[in-house]
Length: 547
Image (cartoon, rainbow, N blue to C red):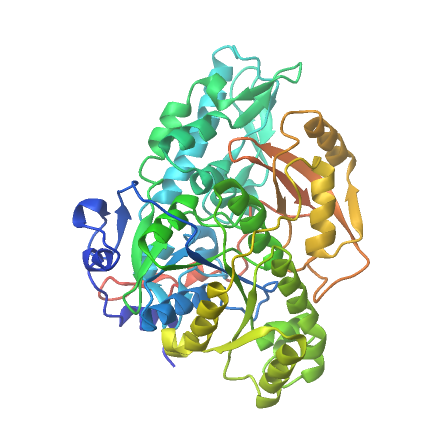
């Protein structure tokens, strides 16, 4: 069996100019980055609601679910059926690529290419975001060093780096007189600038959002923003090219727009609004994915991205595998290849909750079961019977081994459901709800919690925000991706729990409040044997061993 890397290397790629011509883009609409990748240098698109398909999943497990793979395979399948479909994805972060989670370019015969470029530096977007973010921090420190005219007493900003580096979770700054303090690094995908890149609609909006980033407080608790420091111009300039969407292709030479990369467990988990709208303007169908499970990226696509941008999916695909469902049902990782109908029956409660979550937004849902060779006939029959008994639209997919051909049934069912869907979107909470009511509604409706607890620090922050003009902003919950709850060890569909809010932070530029649950980390660490130990150049100077 060929590896993802081997399949990618053997792919017959078309020049990116030829891919662009398939969606009516001319060479002058592109900024070329070699033969196989480009930025789309055109902004005068007219995008309507379009046929937007959102792909999400159950809570991820070590067995893997294949959400990006299904997303790519479905778009290829739609193209096989004669539809002009574009896949719209996030960019991978270097941290997981060098770790063990790997990249985000799909797998098998459902990949986007050039895989190694996309997974590493790509077109430099993450470097630009990292540099722009750290420039703000450097300019804050410089301002304080030269007299602190704005009167910073509390800094609400830190550093970022696109790497998994646990040693930087807490640092000591020695910045001269009156500027010795503790700070920290987040991974770049958690930067507010990443969220802003993904939510802004044009350069004017981008600069306005940058100017409204809250960076600190005076002694009297008066907020200080980037615009008070007067550096929104240089930050926007650093982001100029990073704001343009990237065009690549699938293995089947269909267009893929890849842009932005916030994690869904610590950020809002969706690709950029401008990329989604560009794809909708250029294609008949757009297939996009949101990070991690429907309790994270799926929820945030709806309650944040859709609400802010007006983008309205017409269908949700919930991806699952038999292995992952069995893990949620208590089966040991070591025995996942063994048939276990009892674990499947218990674990399927997790899938049912995610279906319920997406249906709560008034979206029709299809479950895409990503098949493995180890799945037994009895297990597959159980899933078919379950779907029939629950009246759930269901499709067996084999995109890893068959590419778009392995998702023809899923594509046909998607077309049928979209054709009959004119539903309005329902949100989990209203903008006018107070902050604590938003959190409570989300916890109960999406996670299945009984209620919400607050640390003393979080309760103090909650009251501060409720008393401010930011009380009506949407919320972006940072929590573990491994469970519907805030406890990563609670698999399946947990019951009888409260979530614990540890902190809240205002992200006024992005336009939401981040709610931190339990012990979620915004700077990951590498594991003992990271993939960085394997990545290398071969004898022909090709990058190898990225997965």
